[in-house]
Image 1 (cartoon, rainbow, N blue to C red):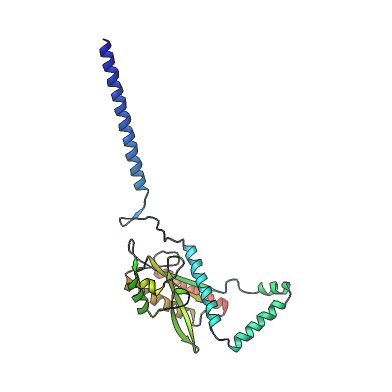
Image 2: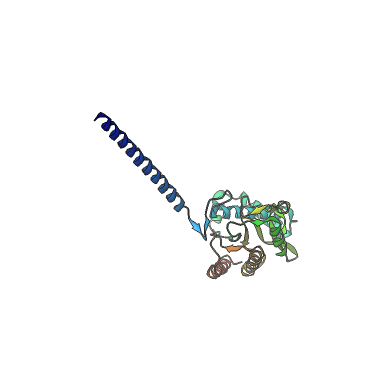
Length: 253
């Protein structure tokens, strides 16, 4: 009788251990399934954060900073014209005025005297733009490597060489160095940006920017995105044109 009791106890322990191992294994499988289902997919491609991913507003700030640096650099290089000398003298005179007068005059200025337009050409996930192919596409679009280590579209306006718009990498800090592209650098995309007021009418400048963007996307088999990194639509393009017209009416440029 004692032997039978021991056998039943051992069998009970084996059954309990088996149930415990089975439930543990099931919980582990369910956890793996939930983890996989939590990763979003588009077109069968898992979306995972890459080290080169940059938030939209950060990229806009980077491009605006690049443009500001570019303007400063060109002002230093360009010979001063009589009008520019007069403007600098006026600035000096302004600094001599009392602070209260300066604040009153500053309040009369338009708070939005500049307008930026930014477009992106991105490689199709999970691909990247190959350096040499990108360099060829930039050259074919009449873009020249220049100031701040990025590319620019130049035009002579009023007897002076002007930069109409610029192209930078979507990867911070935005530089696109020719030698690095030739050496095989790969990037996820490029950003094109223009600033108003410009040396040519805003609508003409925007259409030039669009033409170049479309040519680059075609040559690189990329996709065109707006400043929010959404696919650029006809409606979005028309909205930018309307914003440019309103800006030029408001600022008198």
